[in-house]
Amino acid sequence: MQSHGWVLGVGAALLILLVAAIGGIYFLESKAGLEFFPAIYQKYCHSHACSFVQVVGNSMNPTLQSNQRVLFIAGYYADNPLAHGDIVQVASVIPLAKRVIALPGDKLELREGQLYLNDSLLLEPYLLERADSQHYDVLMEQLRTTQFRVPSGKVVVMGDNRNASTDSGSLGLFSISDIQGRIIIVTWVDALFQKA
Image (cartoon, rainbow, N blue to C red; front, side):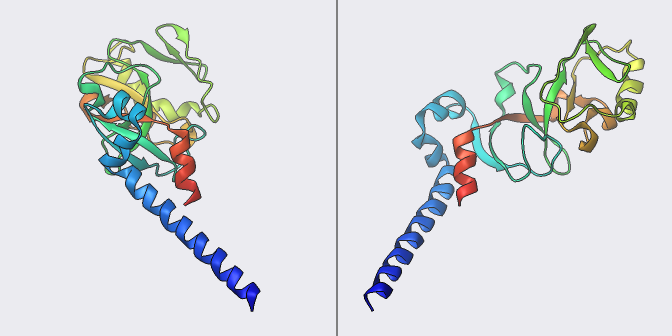
């Protein structure tokens, strides 16, 4: 009989830990939860709306995994410059997580299946694999009309898993106004969400 009491005690303790972990996740997703972590709050959320969002799909593999939680900073670019390599959320039927490849005024060309940014080979160590050249057909057709320069107010965004990504390669240029905010990877938060 004593062993049953011990098992029930351990079970109750595990249940309390699970409830605390789940409660912690909901706490983290609230503004109060972000304020609990002053470094994140001060750096990103003091003057912007922040939330933890879940990645949907595999278009950003290997950088972002489907179901991974990331910090989304809405309106980040209202007072911060957009930069090459930033991971952003783009407005679409379903918001898309993509990487900024080219900015207004940049020259972007496809040569022998590889992208060249401002006449230099674009080094992309984050890519899962090189995309088939056909992936870029729509974008290159659009850029052909501007001597391969990204027009004012436009941006090129792509997934890191190009062969499984719906992005500028297949949809063409996006308006800068389509960018809703920045995505930041906060590894310890993702680990907490995975444990729950």
